[in-house]
View 1 (cartoon, rainbow, N blue to C red):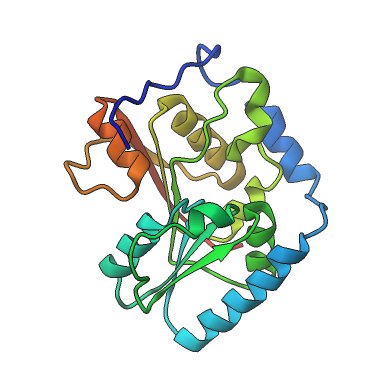
View 2 (view 1 turned 45 degrees about the horizontal axis):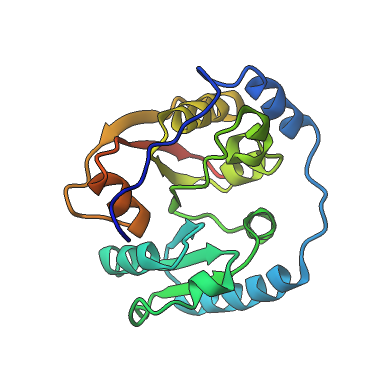
Length: 221
């Protein structure tokens, strides 16, 4: 990747005026979308793999090419690390051998999270690294905090960490976390200083952009 990434631009001057309403709708109208067959099948395989490990779980949701999954597996050798992404092409790119305690899964996150919750999964750590910001005001419902799956995502529990190069995304996510759980997430700017978890993190940092991190400890519901 060349380091010429432009900062996120948006027609929003601040947190979306519809955010609280969207979150309330997610709370009062549970998502009932049918589970995709390929996600159901791949989740079952992931569940079998996880059961064979008997280790605390780390989820790397939206892992892209799996660089972060590999790095997290090295950082946490006593954990089972599952990276999930919807793109078979991204997951299939060669970024070296997977550590023995890591697994990459092709799945729709909306479906995967619901299956994980139904199966009683309780990740110790859950990473959301540089999700698509969907910065246009009209795309709020496509951001994770504006999506109907948000209550399920938060109900999985664990130490949730979100990273983004758009401060407003992180700010909105914190507001949504507070509305759903009553917990105040910690939000701060950070500098990885060469210790990059993802290719996007490296690209944004080396382009001179500010990076933001949110973390919050959640109880499994």
